[in-house]
Figure 1 (cartoon, rainbow, N blue to C red):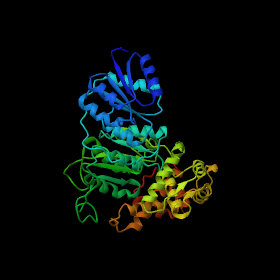
Figure 2 (cartoon, rainbow, N blue to C red):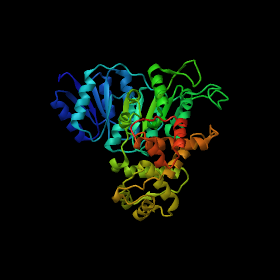
Figure 3 (cartoon, rainbow, N blue to C red):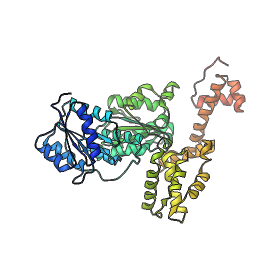
Length: 479
C-alpha cells in the first residue's frame, strides 16, 4: 500500500481506535484517530485524509449526520460507517446518506481492510443529496448476523430499481422486506401493489396481472385494470411466484424482456413502469427441474436474491422480536406485557415452524389472555403446547386436505374484498381439485386409463370426458 493514503478514524472507544490504527498501519496506511466528531469534521474541512471511518454514536454528534456534510464539501471522499446499534434503520440511513459501506460491530478486521481497499481503489462520482430522511421506524427487526446481511443488502437496493427475488419459509417476513424496498426506495412516491399467485384461480391470473378489454371473455362487461397498470410508477410485489401457471409465466417473461405488455383481448402495447419484487417459499430450481417453472423467467427475476432465514436459524433475535411484537400489541389496544427471563428461554426452546408470524401471534395471545403484567415460562409453555406438538419432537401436525383447501379459499376471498369476480365458483374450485388428482393418477398408471378409472372409482367414459374437459395431457401406450 502507498503510504500517501491517510485514513481518518472517529470512535469514542479507545480500544477500537487502537486496534484499527494498528491494523491499518500494518497495511501501510497513515492513520489519524480521534474520539470526537468535531475533530474529525475539522480534519475533513482542512482537506486532510483520503478515507473516513466513523462510529455512529459519539459524545458530541451522531456520526451519520456527518456523512452528508462530508459529501457536500468533499464529494470524492468515501465514508465507512460502523455501529453497535446494528438495526435496519442504521444500515438504511448509512446507505441513503451516502456512506460507502456500513459495518455492524463487532466486525472482522480482514473485512474492514477489504472494505478500505475497495473504497480507495475506484474514484467516486458525487452522489445526489437525499431530500428528506426516512421516518424512524423498524420494518425489520433483529441483530443476528443473518439479519445484518439482509439489512445491508436491502439498504443498497433502495438506491436501485433492480428486480429482487425473496425466498424463505412462510412467516419469515417476505412481504415486510418487499415493503421496505419500496418504502425506502426511489419509487416510494408510487403505489405498492401486491398480488398472491396462490390465491387466484389460474385462469384469472393473466387478467389480474395485465387487465382485460371489454368482451375479452365471458363476464368481461367492462375494461379491467390489471396490477401492472395499478402499480405504475411504484412496486409490483408478486408473492408466491412459484404458483404462477405456465401461460402467465410466458407473458410475464415477455414483459420483463420488452418492457411492455398488452391487456387480455387488447392490441395496443402499454409500457410497464414498475419495479418487480417476487417472493416464494418454494425451491424454484427444483420446480425448473420438474418442468413447472421457466428457467429463463427464473433468471430474469433472480437478479438479486435475498434469502430470509427461518426463526430457528436466528434464535438470538427472539428476545428483540418478542418485545417488538408485544409493543405492537399494545399499540393496537392490548395491555402492555413483558416477559420473564425464564419465559424468553422457553421461547428459545421452541422450533418455530411458523417462524416470526407464529411468534407474533403468540405474543398477541399472551397480551390478550393473561392478566399478569410479566408473562412467565409456564404461560408461554401452556400456549405453545396448545398451538403445536412439543418442540423436541421436531414434528408439525400434518395439514389435512380440507384445511389446505380452506386456507387457499380464504386467501382467494381475501384477495377480492371488493367482490368475487366469478359466478361459477363451485365448479371452478372442483376443477382445481380434479385437475391435479387426475394428473397424478394418470401419471401413477403411466397413462393407462382403465387402471386410472379403477383407482378413481369412475366409469372409463366419465374419465375420458373429464380428461377432455380439463384439457389434460395423456401419454398413451405405456399402460
